[in-house]
Image 1 (cartoon, rainbow, N blue to C red):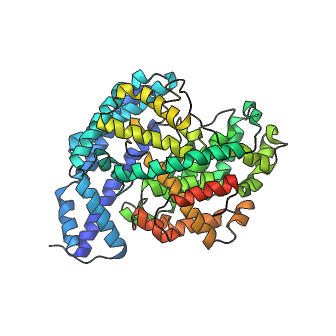
Image 2 (cartoon, rainbow, N blue to C red):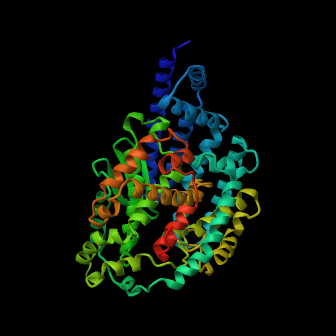
Length: 498
């Protein structure tokens, strides 16, 4: 019987080997969404399936269970105890999933992403429908294998936000949407107008790219350990120590799409780069949850990036870079970038209506999983939800149910993380304002490192040492609560304090 120290060391070696193999899959996933030619999607699917099966076999090896039992019979504390807790949680989930299911999911979702891109480009849901049907069936099988008490969705969302359930999310999102409806109406009625003719101008893509690199660097993204590229759907992938990749997209008429997309993904990148390298491959070297991850990106994109103070620093840069903005004041930038208006595209939505996009996707995910909505009926069901929550007609599939990549990669259960991230971000900002008295003075002057350092010390370095709700409690002094987010919106748009 090995000692606890040797058992921990052996488990750590196995985790690092598995994480190294997983990082190879991450590189292939990044390549698939950047440079892979369309003809390579079939082979990529087989590559991903093989790697997924190998990772799963390593994670579920009987020796891992033996080592966990040895450590559970000893007394661990601190980081080791947290790693043991999460290793056990991951092992118990993994052993319930047959290798062939893991392999098939990887293969199908790899190919489905390529089909989704084509379907979105052609605005033709019929191309993607057979793949969505396969994915929904596979995710139902996954949920049955993992097990659940009340709702199959619980088994899927738990992978992204540990402890979250369909019932809790339904209550939280339902209450939030009811509060947002009158608040959005009040904001729209009172907001100042903005010069939307600026969207008809041309903004050179090379200049946009340079500014995007500048803003990522300004918040602390380390280009020696990361890179910025383009893709059809912005994302961030942390491949491993020293290798974090963020992606954005550019449009000649929309310089702020790339700018805020980069700022958003840089927030994710800061989290990845802020995790302890000494804990790489262990839970304490991984993000606490997708909701916590999203809080970092939304904090930088919205609470900081769309603030008046931020544009005191960045307004001059845009005026010097683009002639269309030469006469635009800092206040006019703020008005332009904070217009509240229901829209069709989630990633273009303002922060007041954004969560309504998440509510409709969450409800459709529940319906797809339960069978209340068939994949074939998704376009119509989507259009009904958009009319219900946003009051808009859906002109085509590209502006409707094909706009997001998530279901093509099997991310059912992912979307609630976005709203949780928004709620967490508002609470985190309140805590940062109390603990960094000169926070906004620094933002106004373009000095952002103080906030980055604070986030790193209070959130990033902990990894999964604390579960999401516990981490928010420790950082903010209160449990997760939508109140801070509603206070933030009322203060920003209506000037209502408290």
